[in-house]
Amino acid sequence: MRGRERGMAMLWAMLLLVAFSAFTVSVLQRGQRIDREAMLDLERKTAFHAAQGGLAWARIEISRNLSCREKNTKEIGSCRVEVTVEATVGGWQVHSRAMPGNVVVSALLRHRSGSALPEMTDWQRIR
Image (tube, rainbow, N blue to C red; front, side, top):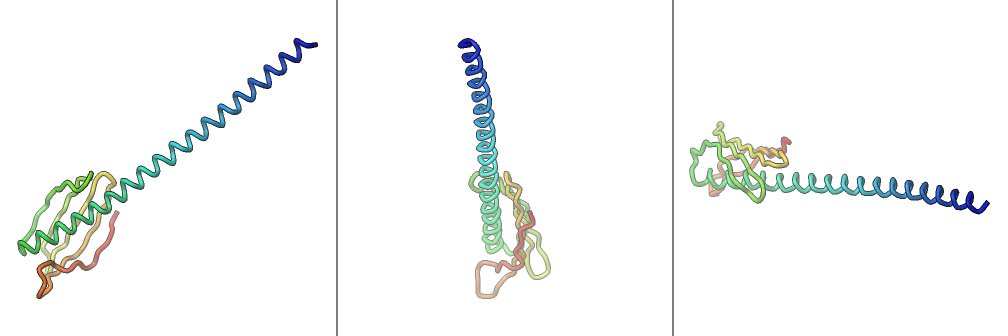
């Protein structure tokens, strides 16, 4: 009888070990998923602020050269930012795209009398 009890104890110990291992794997996978989501969120926030920096750079360039029309790539923080400036009637349309994170912001800039920097109007986040 004693041998049979030892066999059952070993079986229960192995079943508990398998259940605990499965639980541990699921907890680790959930932690990795949360970590990935946090990194993507940080990447998007960084890209958003870099794209905003691209708009600020465009405002300064336009204040220096009112006939500014160009496409330029800048490194802002850890992002590569593509800034496109197009002259429109009464102002400039500026698009700023930051990668990684793929964030695009756009604004219409208008020249203000008495101010060196153009005024930012019609700001929008496209992506």
